[in-house]
Amino acid sequence: MPQIRRVLLSVTDKTGLADFARGLTAFGAELISTGGTARLLRESGIAVTDVSEVTHFPEMLDGRVKTLHPVIAAGMLAVRGKPEHMQALAEHGIAPIDMVVVNLYRFADVAAKADATLEELIENIDIGGPTMIRAAAKNYQDVAVVVSPQDYAAILEELRDGGTLSLETHWSLAKKAFRTTAEYDAAISARLEAGTAAGELNIRVPKLMDLRYGENPHQSAALYGRHGEGVAGAEQLHGKELSYNNLVDLDAAWQLVCEFEWPAAAIIKHTNPCGCAERGELAQAYRKALESDPVSAYGGVIGLNRAVDEETAREIAKTFVEAIAAPEYSPEALAILTAKKNLRLIRVAPHTDRLVVKSITGGFLAQAADTAKLDRAAAAVKSQRAPTDEEWEMLEFAWKVVKHVKSNAIVYARRGLTVGIGAGQMSRVDSVKLGAMKAVLPLAGTVVASDAFFPFADGVEEAVKFGATAFIQPGGSVRDEDVIAAADRLGVAMVFTGVRHFRH
Image 1 (cartoon, rainbow, N blue to C red):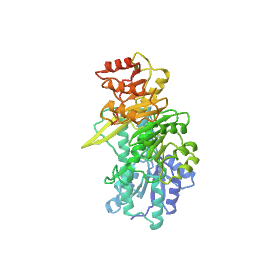
Image 2: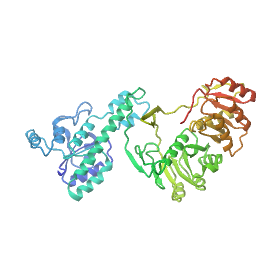
Image 3: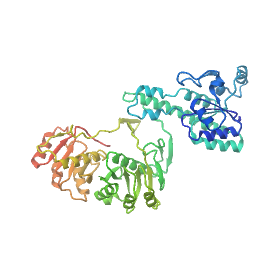
Image 4: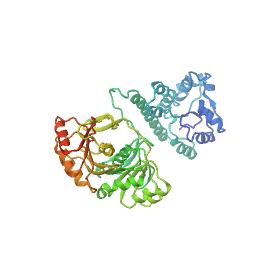
């Protein structure tokens, strides 16, 4: 394999770059670079030649044209084993380039901003970077292409051991490079087509890890995503390896607690909440969530929307919990929770998915994420009696929770806590009965949220028998008038939202 004599560096992510470049020069490599990358290297005391000195052509068009030049392209694309290629380089005084270190403009960061303008998006589309990456990867047997700072240490170690990089390493780096440009182009296409009826669904995300198995031991599984994005890319701080089911439940818990502005806790079993509460302090929220159904909470997964403090950690440590998702953990909380050997702790960074994708036999279903929020002013009071102020607060809380319960979904709630949850029943009135049956706390004075309309008055009648005083539902049944009449006859409040929250 060829020695690394000449290296082209042009990166957006400059993590570890100076140390990597310094290591390359220790092996006698000449460095050529552009713009901010060259400036960083010089400031770090590393000798570097500007690309413009090699091409004898200045950077222009606000930096859009730097490396797009035959001298650079030929240096990367010349096949060393073809005498005619090497002769052409010699005739034009072009030196080969043996390594290309490039990463791309952070298009994804700009694309993640909801208010990003088309001009911003276009300006952050890298042109020269993908060109160099593809050129180097195409000529992988002669040129090493490095697209990630995570590879710097291993490359230097291999050079120290043998003086060159193996063909296997060259090929591995090239595959990663092609994957990088494919994902980059897919991200651009998806963002520019956002809100339009795109003709293709492109899903390309890297594998983060293999899982021991899927939902059941006989099913193989893996996790795909990007580091630092949502539950998939969360950092595991402690505990056993995460399972497929852990990840599904952690995501359900995290999505639910992210609905709330105040400190909130959710306890999840089999993707459904068995308890959820919102309070002024996190420990209070957790205690109230646990009160909703302490039996089902055993062995559950917890989501918390605030940094876990010592008091909350002590409360959680009193029972068996599989895993916790939270934005942060205090040192005191970590000391308490990590004493439990098998408890999985993950630190989650906020992330919003615009698209929800599910597989079906032979294809995929894709839909916009359910981001609908309740607007009290837009909701319609249909009953003769309007909800009291306290009932309104209870209804708003229940409506946030029912959105995250499997259909048919019914939630009995008080102010800031669930009391009974009926999930996944084939009949809505059965969900009403199940939610009441699961209740540990008294049901008298609770409100009820229903993810879809009541098809008959029986659901309302049953809930009132258990003590419900107010209801919130989308409306839209052909029997809405019968349901409203039942509410009036029973003296309870009925609110229609006009928004359905089916969750299958």
